[in-house]
Length: 405
Image (tube, rainbow, N blue to C red):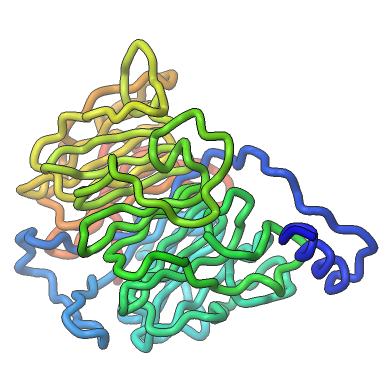
């Protein structure tokens, strides 16, 4: 009996169902992996007071901004505040903090869930749990109260994908949990929607010295310290830009073509990374770059010199460059390029500097919006986002958003 059959049988008994088969892989909705805001190494930010985490020399940003599709959250003073709307006349911390998180050092948001790392190294997650993405072996489909991920201790950072997440530990090891239909957690637990109680964090074999983790919808990669190699697992065509492989990599493999990247970021189907101070993208990049053929196997240079930080939305990307400017490119229909107007259609527009914001030290992206954080802890956002329930607010030029009163 193979592992899928064994786990399906176990899930049937736990769920009280007579038959439960593994759901066949299907295309997940195209959603981004929202990224947190934090100071960039080497960036001049004299007015930003940094904290030092208990793990040693790791610098903790004063606050993080997580832009999920259904939740907008901010980590400030160790607490996490979430809202279903972003309003320029209401501080981000005006919403009551989530219960149970008092000393968070980092925040990351997925499609419809979020996770925070505590100073003690635990990971607490909240939101949707339909794929076990809360990692708490929880029977419920959702938890608005943060729950502890089972199997994680001494975490330094957490990274989230569409419906899975991974923790980077102090010693460079990685543990992942959540949806695993394409092997994106590298775990032995299959994708079993009805068996949330089986899903906790599992160690990623072979990865022992990671310095960063990036999670797409069905792919996960780590950047190694020494040697500076990149390991990937999950859906291979998006991980190693090598099409023609029909099977998934359920265990990590080294991808030589992705060596020596300083940073890699992802949305649901595309990756961008910084190497030699330039941004290169691959995967499903038809809305990020122009070209006669957008082969997923191609590595496309975006010609963004002196790049320090890169983040992706659903159909656009932005980079923080030396000196604090932010350059955005991709489809312009949502206003997320910050150019003062929207452009109909999905044609990719080339990189262009966003005007009207002071020098930035951090950058965050959501599905259809981007935000910059300045050295004075000011936040400027542009693009499209929820504004009071389901109504959409569109701001193609940057507007200032208050973090606190």
